[in-house]
Amino acid sequence: MRSISILSLAAVSALAIAPSAFAQDAATGQQDIYGNPVSNETASGKHWAVVGSATVLQPKDDAAPGIKKLDGDVAPTISASYFFNDNIAVELWGAADKFNHRVKGDAGKIGTVEQQPLALSAQYHFGQADNIFRPFVGVGYYESNFSGEKIDGLSASGQHVSLDDAKGAIGTVGVDMNINSTWFARADARYMHARPELNVGGAGTGQDLKLDPWTVGVGIGARF
Image: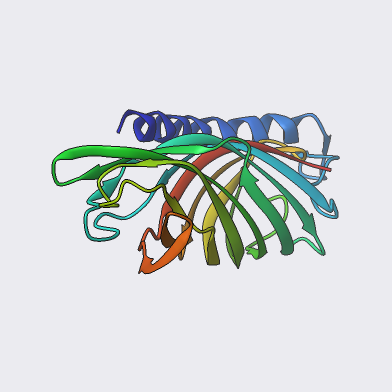
């Protein structure tokens, strides 16, 4: 997928730039007794962080009988985190625009559907606040609203097909790469347990779609 390739290139670029940029920031400070550069700035003690990312969301294949695949899509995502200390944070994360998926059956495209997830997670960030690389993990709860459902062939009567909101657990792994005490680059991956019910003509069918999507994102953040 071209969008995933673009995200991969952006992640590699951030990895290459972050260490040198952080070193330059450190060099603007004072010197210790051995003549080594010491930064006057620190990321420690800052309580808020915001991140803007480009994110790919990809549901799993064979979600239900008649649905072989939902194509992945890329959309902007935004997160805001509050740090209780340098390691423990709570994050509100969501899509700033909708992910648009082409729905495919055995014979090809049978429709489209959009979704827009929102999640609240607790996170643990490893290491010291000023480390260049800071991996983190998180777990929480999310909801994803589905809209714009246009799916043909799943209803013999031709009635409108829709999906309930997906709700459930979300897990996160990622790494922050400090550029300086304020700015950092981020790469993350998220897994959502998604089993929305399929509705036909406004009534539930008892058929859940096993979407269980992964997301992969890269972005830039600031802490204050």
